[in-house]
Length: 186
Image 1 (cartoon, one colour):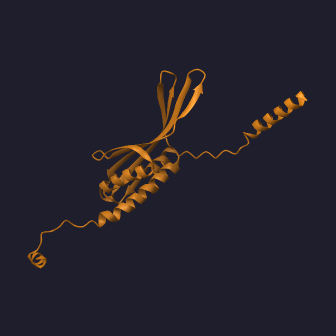
Image 2: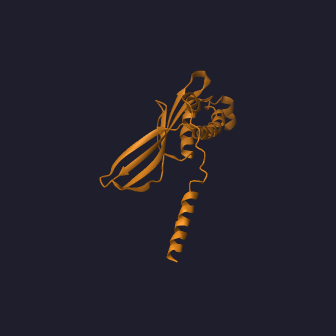
Image 3: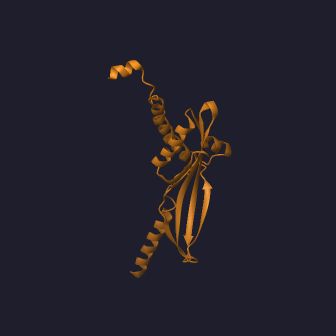
C-alpha cells in the first residue's frame, strides 16, 4: 500500500513537471535593427514646436508616465512609469527587491518650415536592492521593439490633432475700437 502511494505521488509529480515545459510561450517580439529603430524613434509634425511640446507632455501623462520633467528652452522632456516591486530571496544576499520602470526621453525641436521633429528614446530599467545593507543598482537597456514606439506615436498623433484646430481657431487680438462701433455701443 505504501509503495502504491509513493508510486502515485511520483507519477503525479512526473506528469506535473513534464507538462509545464509544453505550455506554449508567447513569441518573443522581433528586435529592430539600428536603422529600423532610428526610423521608429523620429516623427515630424506640421505644427509649431510650442504646440508639439505641450502635446508630448499630455501624451506622456495620458500613457501613465509620472515624474515628468521638461525644459522648453532645450526642448527636452522625460518621464518615468511606476512599477510594482517584487521581493525575492537569494541564499547569498538574503531578501531583496526588484523593480522594472520605463523611462521616456524626448527631444522636441523646430524643423524649419516643415514643422517640428520629435525624437523618442524608451529605456527599461531594472533596479535591484538586496541585502540588509540596502545596496542597490540598476541595469538599463533601450527598448528595441516597434510596439511601444507605435503606441506612443498613436497617442501623440491624437494629442497633436486635438490641439491643432484649437490653435487655428483662437480669436485674434482685440483691435482698437472704431468710432462707429463705440457710438453704436452707447
